[in-house]
Length: 171
Image (tube, rainbow, N blue to C red):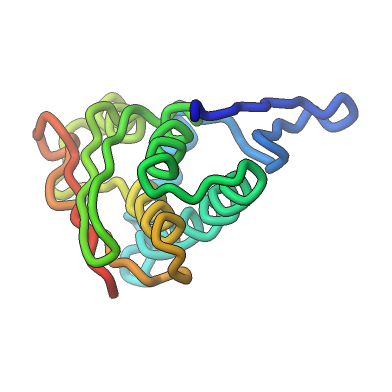
């Protein structure tokens, strides 16, 4: 089943929604600055706060979409989740795995590309947004609660790699 995308714009507030959920359309500038802020607040857990917020927001959207469209097949859910990533303008992601472990690869990452344009290469991966996104995907695929998965970015485009690679482990 192809991903159904219903983008709307409220005529009174000019706020966007996607499939009935409020969204802010992607911007290299915005997400790069949010990521930099999380990095700057590393001493108080900024990167994990960002990842957790994304996990919580995306999980609601995934669960709602699956319920409204009667989707229970894992493969179909996985395709919907990777489709959402691209629909948000975040790039291209592949996701695979089981309820115990998995992997995600960013073939294109607008967050990493934005960081590279603004600050150049960095000494460690920075895609905390995608860590949260991937955690939400695995939680939704296998119907587990928030914080059920630990997602680690092993390599990132900002460190000079061709792709960003994430591992997923059941917590």
